[in-house]
Structures are given as C-alpha cells and as structure tokens.
View 1 (cartoon, rainbow, N blue to C red):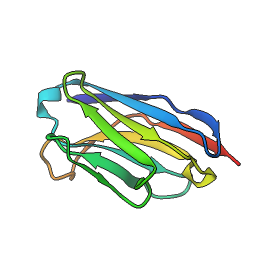
View 2 (view 1 turned 45 degrees about the vertical axis):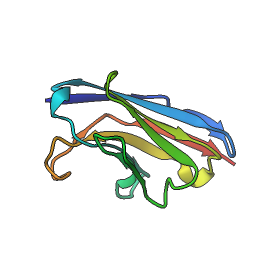
View 3 (view 1 turned 90 degrees about the vertical axis):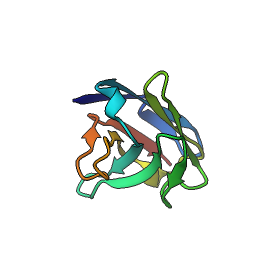
Length: 118
C-alpha cells in the first residue's frame, strides 16, 4: 500500500502563486510515476501534470506554462508550483501515484483545496 498526503492549498488572489506538496509513505519502492490532478465540484477529475520515475514531466493544457511539477525521490515527495493563478484554477487538487499499473489503479491522496479569488 501507498499513502499520499497533500498540503499547501489555500486562498490566494488572481496572479499570485501557490506551492502544493505531496509526501508518499508505505511501499514507496513500488511507485513509478506521480501526478497532480484537480477536480471542481460536479466535474471530473482532470490531469494537471505527471512526472515519471526518471523525472520527465508532462503537462496538460491545464498546467502548461504556469505550473511546474517537481519530484524528489529521496524525500518521496512531489510538488506542484503554481504561478499566475487564475480563478478558473479553483479546485480540489489531488496527488496520485502509479505502481506500474499504467494508471489503471493509482493511489490517491485526500486532496487539498485551492481557491483563487478575482
């Protein structure tokens, strides 16, 4: 089993920055890729960014250009630096980890709320 705990969410104004952190514990040796997703009330959970075991990052349009994902394997953490935040970035943000299932059965954190006021 893998446990994920997020932190760093909060209320910020448009244009400001926020850094989310996620720490993994448990069977961390099984973790391959890690990612950040977000979900608005009533909406589907959507991928923001994913980072491979080797550190290669991929961003969806949601995070491209303003967000940066960073993984520290020694500390078992993955951070999401979010800059130039917009009201439409308001969502619950979730950390996820895949253990070589091809993201068919990822582990999820409990989520952290981000609210961006205009």
